[in-house]
Image 1 (cartoon, rainbow, N blue to C red):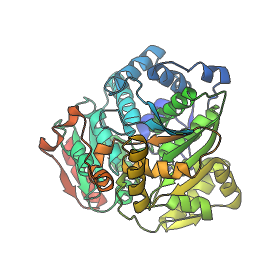
Image 2: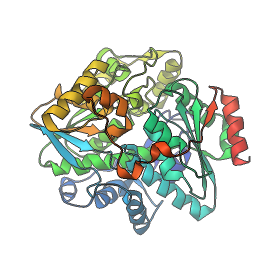
Image 3: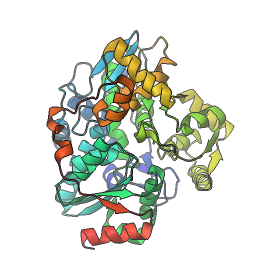
Length: 461
């Protein structure tokens, strides 16, 4: 199993190498050279299996020889042992033909736990074999950072630095990043927005002297292993509703495009997905791009769904790579134009994207109204990101069952939920003391050289 860069000028890697590398050396993102296919009978055989077994069967063809079957089963078991629901990703019915996939039962109450817990186990296992140590630097709009902290804190072979936009994450998200006590994890509150933080991480990867000197690795969804782990719950939920004998549709609240790209991979593998609907908040660049063909940034507007406050959606590059016939040079040109403010998608590529993805937008007022209405009708309390998904999904309902991804627990965004419903959602008992724990955080400027100096000092390099 080989992995290639979306920009066509980086070394071809194995799964293990791609996982440890993160961003390709040409600035691109790694994708499989070919996507393994699952026969309809093999998809049908997933029905009724534990989530861990579904994960093994869906992911195993992508791994090559990186782990033995027994090793990989053990890593999966460790990854999901701390989840608060035996089904791991349970389905709840919201209405006729509309279902909610609850992805917030992990340790940090967000969908990122599904990938981060597993990639933490896989990276530590790979490093233990070699005795190597790596430095992971990641950017977060809120949930990736807390999930990474939980997955990597205390691991022997990893130093982790998470950049988050100062003042632009919820208090729960911030405290989940700033309260771990282990010395190998570091929360950095950076001036600017998420796109600024993500840009500095990419700058570090593109500074090869720094990258090689600190043995830099990444856990943002630029890392293929992150995307792959998220493919699993598309299969588990679809099979619960009758796949492969009937098609299903998905609506995904997304900012960085990683979660919905996982659905695209599931479809490429053979899962019968009728619609893949992109749900955006007021930072609606993905919806605008699909409607107009122009991917043009216009600044991030802070919202009550902050994890989606993104204008530069990294994983969209993977979709563009396929839409442009896997032409790495064409993608590299688009990404160069993006640095200058944006690009226009060719007509042929745009038609390909529109044949694969639908899209919609949800305003701040509509988000609040959806939280209120969903609770009144179903008793389900939605986080604002999940509410964005539900509102857009209702505009795309059809004959196939629609599954909306609920990406976070409502208690991670108590102010937004209270503003909609008048009541404040409580944290689960295991996190009840979160606001009593001391915080440990470093405020940093949006300055590449200063960030690199701080990281070198912290790791003793």
